[in-house]
Length: 386
Image 1 (cartoon, rainbow, N blue to C red):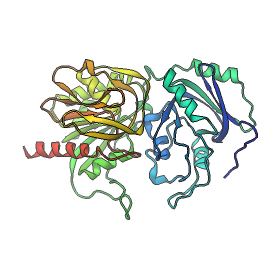
Image 2: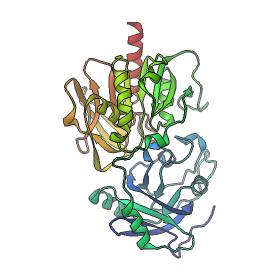
Image 3: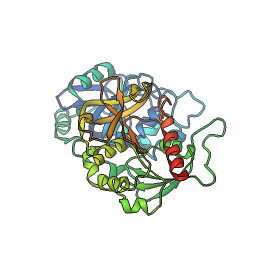
Image 4: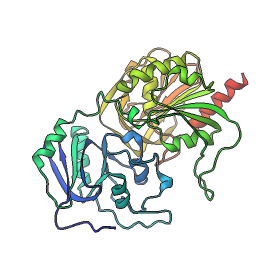
């Protein structure tokens, strides 16, 4: 592993307001323009970097010890990192974990993603909270040569995520079957055997651990691309439909996703959505979505289940939210964030159709909300029995 220079900056982050943060570059060399967000999770940096919901974003990690457990292919949430880059407090060290197959620096370089260390992440996080998620240009040059004016100009010229459909960019190109279950000691990942509940999962940027949760709940999963039509879905004779997480502006993705979802809703099939899938369901039901100041990104977000009064600690990753004031009659708000009161869940009254803004599969994060996968499976079993 290469030794990072401490004598001079080899990377910098130029914000659209003209602020510049200097640090030590690692991973790939070059430049990338994106939205800057912060994530408060203490574990799971590899899962975060490979979460398709982070497309178009550079992630600032508030936890300082990033890279100390290395990287292993088993923890990838998709085939390659999707986040544009990463910002950390301390430069990554040699990994100390028996599962590691390589170190974070080498992995980022191989995957073409830029990292910067030596940053005052507290100060940067405060800036994000105060001014909203800024547009930035992240640059890494081993020679330390930067045209700051040009970098700031690139950050200012970037149009941002509003109006941007990224789901098509991260979705699968063609349909496939999924049968891998959740990781368990000592066997690791195992395959689901036999027949199961027929589920069609729409891939707006699906994390692998979500699909594993569905398989572990007894589902026989077929994954379809984000642009699948209602006819494509119903042709597979599903017993339930799942809407995955994903990046970008939900209103932009909704232009082709909403007609599909409305076609499925007309069949009264059990339907479950997560993150972008939650927003897609809300749009299909007649609600609207709005851009948040800096979003929710972390593994410690308290959410209250209004129907039970129970509080769950959840994993979140979203920059847009459903406006609960626009929910139509017959659609109830089921969960709310205890940080800011924003909507975190909806359900269609009297029907097995529901969704949540957070990530019940965790990866990383607490597993308080895994019961939602079981609820989805139970709804399908009940329909089959009827």
